[in-house]
Length: 129
Image (cartoon, rainbow, N blue to C red; front, top):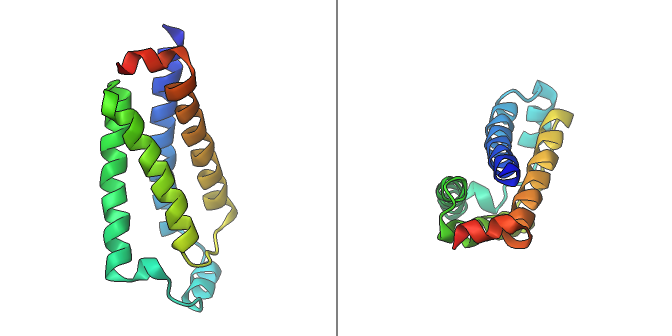
């Protein structure tokens, strides 16, 4: 089925974007790094905040794997990851991003939305039963 192929490509694109975002953070310009150092510490600079980020990352990996293999619990798990991510944005501090990182985050958000749309509102939702 063609929609399954599109769905799997979206998942792979989401993974690629996620890894690209991490890499792009590593290669920020020195100006952005210096500006970021002057910002106040945020919730995610605390041990609890770091724990939440690591836990969310683990849940994301399990959710993406489950979706790719059409596991039923993957649907809800991925939705929870997206909701946790939104909650984390609200708790986070101001971020200074370069245009590449910002664009990658925007595209990742779009793929999240496309994946959620497919798993809940398209015929592919039947594959998760």
